[in-house]
Length: 127
Length: 288
Image (cartoon, rainbow over all chains, first blue to last red; front, side, top):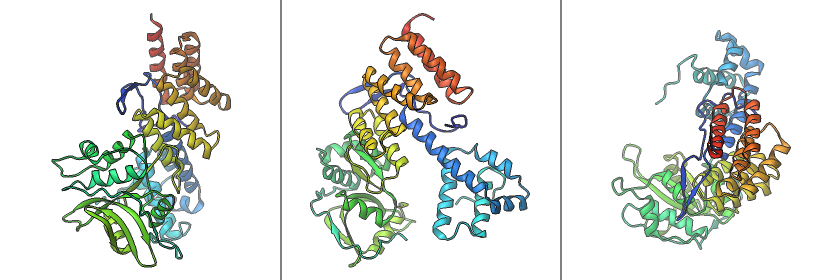
């Protein structure tokens, strides 16, 4: 399990007093909540899916064409926050729904989204 | 793409309670409707007090989710498709949705409850506002729903499984219930999850955590030990095992576990949390 890059993930500690319906339940200080593990596992799965994409030849070729080292991009993807990773996956899902992600346009798009998120370029203006 | 597959016949949960809203209070009315449908014993007035913001003349989405948890129920967000609504209706659960009934420039946000779909006659049936049976065309419904980004959820009893269950989303929902302090419901939900994914590490961890939070330390210790037998590298389980041990007065064993966890964690982000646990245990023991 990859924990080393859980930067930005919410580490949930129940060191506070939890107030439920009509009773007060104090969880032990320093307990690591289940949500932490859910986040960690979801992140690992997201990273694995993006890494599969990055390992594809057409994606690598597009990166090289744009003058970017695929190894550096792969490195930076690991530094994405959970929210950014989710955004990346969502964009890719939308592509899949719209057509063939294996097509050339799909590869270019995936590359641009990844580069945008890792901060290499800034072409997608958020409305 | 958001339409139903062809061939699906009409479906309507006619027994869904009708809770007519008072002025602006569509959120409490819709929430009370789905809570009652799940068998919860709630009254509109109580829900109004918990989720209605008079100054905003409305309710926030997260308040509806939080109030659902307070009732020991699991709010599960659905995919924004008619097929997802249909699947939940088939499981007997009405779906709370957020709509924008006006145009984007002058938003008029509204919560309503989908109770029926009839694709052949192009109909969606809702408990909406003061209307017991609000019938709209599929196209109009999708148009109003789209402007909330297709936001909607169902209310699950803790022993129920979502119709089109997505594991991470479901586990997040249960983890939130756990954090809300609804330990009995969370325990039931983790056990239900384990019936779908036997031996699942997260669900097992969740069950251990519920025991730990509830003060059943021996039971928690037992669950964490089982987990670590399967996977001794599970540092989060070792952290909590140490706490379960310390709370039983077994400080020596607790510190041994936390040292081992620290060795395993190396310089990962968890190291700081483990050190925090170590200090907590030393404080509990007294001295240092």
